Length: 275
Image: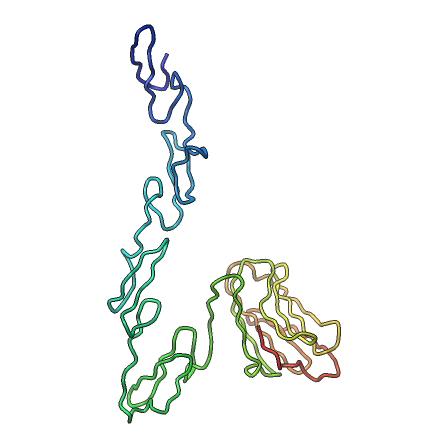
């Protein structure tokens, strides 16, 4: 009476069924649910999938093996340079640079020790940039995220978590200013840009569209919305032009939409930082 190709072992006035791995029960009539909570062999939050003859584990990134129990060595194909030491992590790795080297992959060489007569002596590279001499002329070698002759322009920022933000001092924001954002998101709502308190400029996501509000001191604030939604995960360009009491909004190089907020104050108060 043993079922599912199990083996019958004779005993004294009885017998025993030796079940295949995927069956259980006195007669091997019950199929094991390997993916049940108390039996699930898949580790590190991997997905257990039942198969005709057992199971398989769909591993989370960074893990391999039949049970997803092995941390894959990401250092097997690392990009660390200049003799840097690779340290494996879950689904990634870090490069420990030799003394003097820097960068994500230790790709930046130590600063050159230049003679006192070097053209770099009085050339002020900013934001941690290194001055090098090329064809007899000083050149600033910018760190990632900076551009300009002296690396004075911040052009890109990486945020480490949802609470991160960038603060631009008021001294770098002018009353007549152009602000251009390149953004990719799949969120329906969120704040993209904000400045001020009683008088303010704000740019936010509202139901997937861009909403820009402008208040130079009269209440309530004036607001405009983009026709397009931008929460499709692709990059979009949002351009704002603040000119006295007017604000224009254009999307991906299209025609601008303009609002005017009339008040006794001729322009927005730019004494506070821009976030």
